[in-house]
Length: 160
Image (cartoon, rainbow, N blue to C red; front, side, top):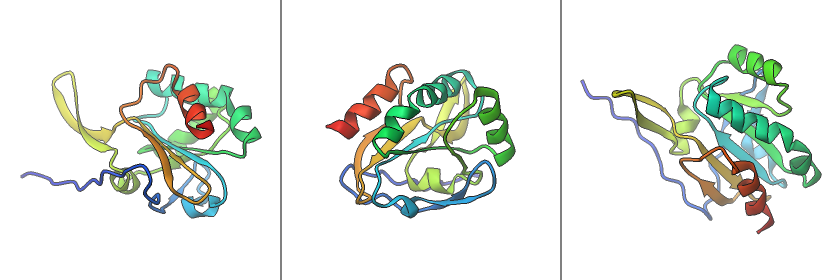
C-alpha cells in the first residue's frame, strides 16, 4: 500500500499559514499570536541529535540578538513535550519548542519529506527555517539548512 502525504511548497511573499501547537510545557502556541513581531520558525528533525543540538545551541547562544530586535524564535519537531523538555533542560535552551507529533504543521509548511538514511526510506522533517515579517508574510525560506553559520544567515535575512 502506498501512502500519499500532501505537502505544500510555500513561497516567499505569501502569508504564513496559521497553526496551533503545544509547546514543551503543554501550553498552546498559535503563530497568529505573534502578529506585529518578526518570527523565526525553524523545523528540525529530532531532539538531542548532533545537527539539531548544534542548531539549537547556536540559536540559544544568539538569543539576545533576537530578543533585542523583538524577534520571536520557535523550534518545531515531531518530538513529544517530554522529549522537548529533556532537550531544553539538557542544553539550557531559552526559547519554546513546539510539538508537531502528527506532522500536521510540518506538512502544511512543506517540510515533511521522504528521506533516505543508510538505504532506508522514511518520512521526516527536512531541516528548514521560515522568517516571517510583522505582517505575517514569509520574508525568507531556508530549505535543506546546513547548521554551521545558519543563525547568522537568519539574522541577516531580517536586516535585509
